[in-house]
Image: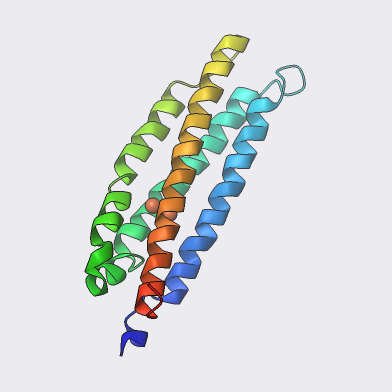
Length: 152
Ligand SMILES: [Fe+2]
Ligand SMILES: [Fe+2]
């Protein structure tokens, strides 16, 4: 009976695909930051657009995780994981705030190297927080599978 109660593999596959997409978006932003102003005069506009896309991806992805049966089912079945899952889902609002602050503080036109370095540092900090978040999330889901399959 446990076999029918585990996290929907279709939903989980979808969420994991979004995690891979997140990695690709972070790489694209990183490349845009490292372009020199000489070769990429419209770097500010490109970084703005990429981060806007990233922010929208996060908003939709978080909403699906919160509502789409990604973790909630494993929570109901496996109370041992409830605390870890609640904690990791609870990181979403703070991550969106961090993304908003980064976007609000971006250079909008010609900017000094120091201003770019500050923005890039803020982006790398957000990227590290996002990757750490997804790692924790993947671990909770994996634990849920293992426990449901009697491997936990
Ligand atoms: Fe998440
Ligand atoms: Fe996620």
